[in-house]
Length: 137
Image (tube, rainbow, N blue to C red; front, side, top):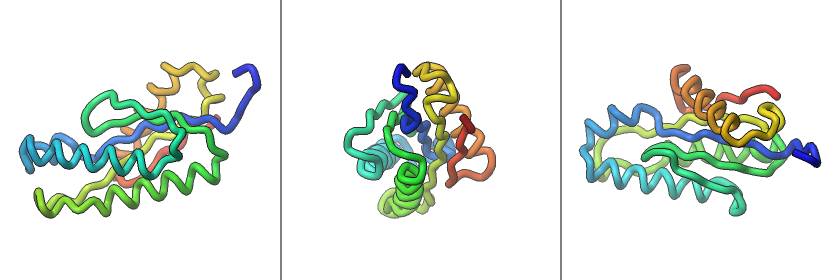
């Protein structure tokens, strides 16, 4: 905040249709899908990203990267989620939605950033999923 660093962002990342997936595949397969999802998120984002898990099938990431670089990470993450091989568990096609909030847009307040990122991810889900929704600074 003191340095007015503009490269920080918070991402709210969620599997699309988690309740439907869970009811379709059952608890054991759901747990395997979530584990695969969390691995994809960790592998697609920079190693120094701070990751949290507010709930199964949802993650929050704090990332320091310029917008164009972070955009490539987000694209890669979304693509890799659709490539998760869930066929061994069911015929469900997986996708995710991401809410992207630049830190300066919420005055660098972590709680506000997380809430805005999760809200933006829900908006992306409502708009069809498999996409990101970026909150303007």
